[in-house]
Image (cartoon, rainbow, N blue to C red; front, side, top):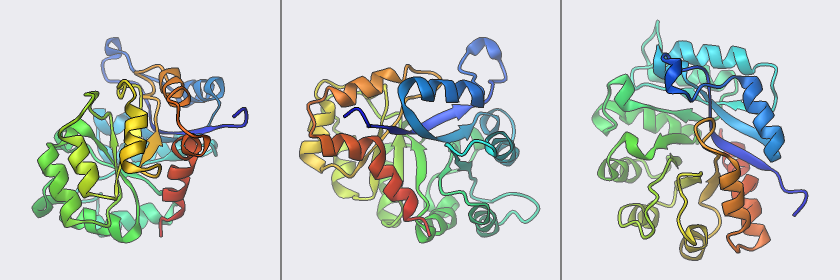
Length: 251
């Protein structure tokens, strides 16, 4: 599979507020890592949205990636939307107008509830537009995740940083009950024969590829996928085809 390329779905750029904590990276650093690992494109979030204000982080992300066609910006959202309207429908329309096809949220950092009484309008709008939503596994409880997927079954949710347990008694039932729940296979998911188990029990279409950049070594994910003993068509689906399909289906 010498022609195999990857799309990384979980990259983050930007420096942390406290540099000594590490984890900072520029767009140029990311592109060097991508070239080294034969990664053709990356979905990118900006750390400024976590360290300072969410929507200014989106604008900085757009500015830093505008001349980099291999970088796919993902906007962070909050249920109330951006100023001056503070209307999530208006914010989503603005997002779609500039071609953004991926969203993410950080409820703990931005002080809102993931439950539908607070975030339901946001989920409904994303589901209607078929815009995938990136969620960190630790950003909400499994029960909250279940209720999100149950109340909004058309919402495409991609879980980042999944649990590394072998037989996961929380994650596997969620995957079973919610066909639009996807998993980003990143270095955190270092489970013995984990990739093969997921394929054998849930098929080939529910997985996307991640490197954990910049905190993790991206080669770990590539090695885990290539040496999992999976058929070539499954490796291609995880590496690039599944996320390409999700992005192509955004309305």
